[in-house]
Length: 86
Image (cartoon, rainbow, N blue to C red):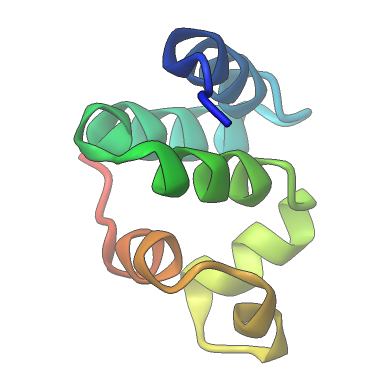
């Protein structure tokens, strides 16, 4: 099935920018903008799942390895774990 990359990117960017807290908005949106144009179709779908995780799970991921990592695609998870915002 062919996906519309532009539509998926727009959904991801929107979700990353409107998380619920300003801190998470800044963290997740900067992470997404940093990697989104370098992903293939499958990785875009994985990123969409990633940005739909709860803020609590994303904070745990950024702080340490937890049992949440089994739900996260490896490349996206590792990129986020290693991401250092400016």
